[in-house]
Structure formats: structure tokens, C-alpha cells
Amino acid sequence: MLIDERLVQKVITPRPAESHKGTYGRTVLIGGNEQYGGAIIMSALATVNSGAGLTTVITATKNQAPLHAHLPEAMCVDWHDKKMILSVLETADILLIGPGLGTTPESFNLLELILAHQTKKQWLIMDGSALTLFAKEQLELPYPKQTVFTPHQMEWQRLTSLTIADQTKEKNSMKQRELGTTVVLKSHQTTIYGQKMIYQNTVGSAAMATGGMGDTLAGTIAGFLAQFPKNDQTIAAAVYLHSYIGDQLAKSQYVVLPTQISQHLPQWMHHFSQKN
Image 1 (cartoon, rainbow, N blue to C red):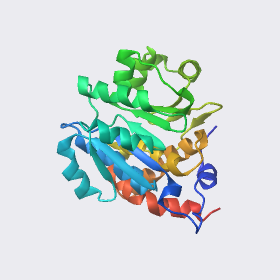
Image 2: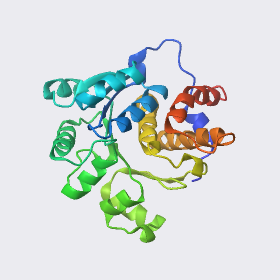
Image 3: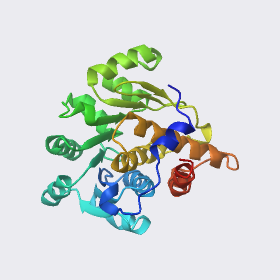
Image 4: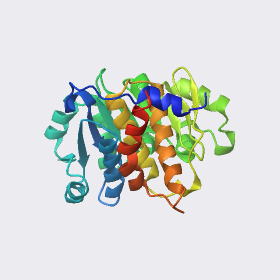
């Protein structure tokens, strides 16, 4: 199925007058080691700007001041504070792990902790180095149907042993069914391998080919799942809108930055919500 504006309009509905921040979901983002703190900050920017009600970031100590400077709307937890981590996990609706996480033993311990404490009511998004660790350690998912993988083609190769040349829709679909997760396979035209259907993104451009764009996409998906129906259509709408905004900005820019996508999310979500 080709994703178009009609699907986005269906997903992004006007907000009811009688609602509060709890109505729009609690997201917990885990990532950002000392070297790649920017990745989790970009994810958090997208999550907050796409409308998640409450966003908490579990990250390395070094990243807390920059996070608060860029995004005072987000709460912050030191990723060495296991007691506090377990506390925020208990109340989460959506978990996102991976942006800037790294592949150290400390990173692996965090991934194991998240997998061990995911509950039936929570959805989990795995991105970046979390996928690399997952593939390397051959871990198991507690709730595959409530899990979203967001690999680029090389990460998908690590997960499935399919070389990039062999990554046809038929073979990708077979591997998605084996994993049981929803797969957002990122490329110049991202494809979502859902539980019931394959969704093909039709927008996006080379202007978006810059570091942090995938982190921003993962954060956008988290924000959408936090507040809209938890299904493949919502994920597809997030993918489309992320690229659609990039296309709009590329009309007057040679390069589009990930943070610009996040800045424009509220404007374009309003635009599509008013078409209902």
C-alpha cells in the first residue's frame, strides 16, 4: 500500500477539549552515551514536538545539561540510577531504545534491563545500536507484536543475514514474519513491513541525507504511538509526515536538518488534523 496524505489525515485527529498530558502518553527514551548524546536529544525533540504528553530521557550524566538546555519539556534520568529507571519504566506507555546508545557492556546491560521489564501494555521501539546489540547477542523479545524495529539496510542485514542486494520485499516480508515485529526499513523510500500489510513511503529526498535523521524518525514514531492508535497505520503516518516535512523544507533548502523536521512537526500536524 502506498502511503499518502489520506492516511495521515485519518491518524492525526483534532485533540478533544477535555484532555490532559496523560491523555497523550508517557514515553521513555533510552540512549545517548558520552560520545553520541546528540542522537537521543534529537529523538527527544521529535517525540515532544510530535505531541507525546510526557517524555523522560534515560541517558549518560554528561548529556543531562545539554538536554535540559535544548528541551526543558523533557525529564531526565541518569542511566546509572537503576532504581529511578525502574520507577519511570513502570508508568511508561512507549519505550524507545537505541539512539546513541553505543555497543559497550553498559549499553548491553541497559538493553537487557528494558527487555526484562517491558510489560504487556507497553510498546517498544528499537533503533540504531540497540538493533546491533540485539542481533549480536541473539536476544529474545518479550512482546514481538508490540515491538517496532527501525533499521537501515546494513542493520537489517545484521538482523536477518540478508545482504542489501538480497533485500527484496518478498524476503524482507519473510524475515519480518519470523521476527514477529513491525519493521520500518529505512532507505531512500522507506518501507514498513507491518503485521497485516506492507506500506511504501512515497516522499522524502536526498536533502534529508544527514546524521540524526533516523533518530528523529524514531522519536516521531514514539510520539505518534504515544497518542494515536497503536497500530501499523500510525507508524506509517509518522514515517510519511517525517519525509513530507523534509520535502516541504527542501523546496527552499539544499540540506534539511533533523532538528528542523522536529521544529515543523506541530505546524504540519495541525495542518493535517484540520482536514478531518
